[in-house]
Amino acid sequence: MGRAFLAICISLTILLSGSPCWAKDASPLQQRLEQWPDWSGPAALTRPGNRDDLIYPRWFEGLWSVANDDLDAPEEDTIRHQARFQPDQRGRIVGDRAFNARSIGDAVLGEQLLRVEDDPSSANRQMAQLKGDLRLETSVTGRGQATPADDTFLADEIVLQILHVPGPPRLSRIETLSRYQRCGDQQICGEQWQARYPAPGQAMANTPLSQHHFQLTMTKVEPGA
Image 1 (cartoon, rainbow, N blue to C red):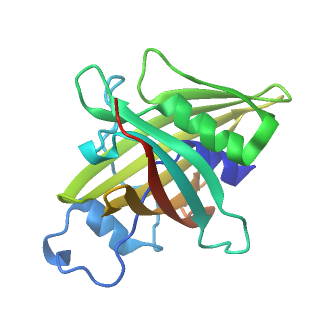
Image 2: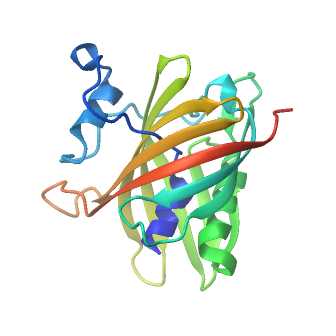
């Protein structure tokens, strides 16, 4: 179940291989890429306000078919789902958060996932209702993004996850570091590095409880409206 819930919250991503030519003057997100897998705790990211969303480049607009592979578990089947990005009220390209979470949730959880709801008062909070009277609350507590080139986009998000179960809720923090790159007129390629940490105050050390490396291919299904 852990990987499924991580997938619901993730932003799709890509990693640079080898030693980058821009390492000397690298941005904080590029430096974070270079530190993988030696993360000793979540990155120091800006806490977003309720109206702050992750803003994508214009070339994300539209509906995409996504193939998602866990490179740390190559024996697992490819997860296939859809992702949609569209203009917000200010004309900026943002993810359709409820649609995207429901699509990947259906692919991984099937009938166990009942519905996904966005918080109308915050662009950074979402609730998933599961069978068995389980609820997964996710809140973005840190975010950073950068565009090092016209065809490249970096994003890093930290999410607090609260699984509401009978008894005390279960908390964890997820950091997802993302890099996307256009690899064709109708395709985006990506990789993702993801680490799960204990909830604040639950452990003296911030050593990741688990780490995953994902590879994604996004193929355009429909153009943006």
